[in-house]
Amino acid sequence: MNVIVANKYQTLLQSLDIDVIKRVEGEFEVEELIAQFENFFFQRMILDITAIKNYKDIRNLQKLSISLDMDKVILLLDESPDSTSSEYLSKLISMGIYNFTKNVEGIKYLYEHPNSYRDVAHIHQLDNKVETQIIERYEPSHGVRIIGVKNVTKQSGATTLVYMMKKQLEKNYNVIAIEVDKQDFHYFPDRQLISVSSGEIGGLLAKYSNADVILLDLNESAVAESLAHTVIYLVEPSMIKLNKLMMIQPKILKELRDQKVVLNQSLLSAKDVLDFEYESKLKVYYNMPPLDEREKEIMALNRFLVRLGFDKQQIGEEQQKKRSILGLFNV
Image (cartoon, rainbow, N blue to C red):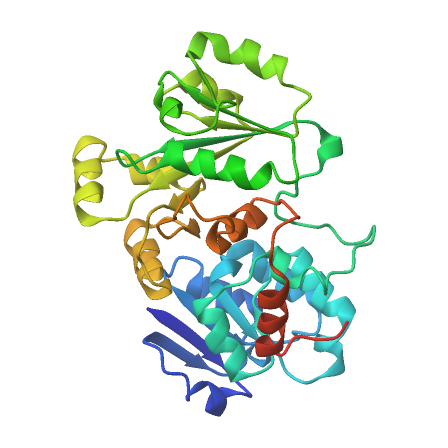
């Protein structure tokens, strides 16, 4: 369910066709809002910026960003030059506040398609006075990046996803793909895929330390998992697989909090994902639909790789369309 905090724009926000569990109206000290919502579970908060007393002082937004999950907050800006200036917006982005707009159409879009850093990077102005909180950007000059992929629900597609990630990334990067403690790579038409045991993985990673990216199909290898810089945990969100998982590992959802959880082979809508987050208390890193490994360009996979920080993927036309819909600023 959703929360609406409104002041100057309460009439505009009444036109939103969303389920609302709580609505508050007026102007509040930021500490009052934190006290009300810090431990209040909601799917989305639509926050009229004028409901925050002294909102033009960016430090009040900083207090809010420390206490609330800003990925779930959509900030409705006013028209004042102070709160729509490039400097102000850049500081919002540096605090991890990516979902902001000036109109109700933008709110509706962000409700279904929340922003990541990449969506607002064109606004961000970096300088030494602003601490940045960016998604993990891949830079070849920083050395090899090791990404592990692990099935949480049984047979959730880790091996196939690693294979498809390799196919896409090797167009621009030097990529090595390794599976640990299994031989399933033999079923793919790629002779460069490598299968090794947990005991061999350390030496093999050292051997390929000149690669740009190493992808690991982790299986159950705790050794390989500990060597990965980033681990993607795959959950197939079908009822039967989730129920089986909870019977075998009743504490698994708690263990996955703050991890990169990807819903793989998922047919869930954006609203379904919000419901899943609400019920599981997890933050979904990406919602991946079923993929066809025979396709040459798969937009859902490209977007996932962009989410991981890789630059050379196709996002141009969609990004321009999105910026237009959101009513973002030419800054």
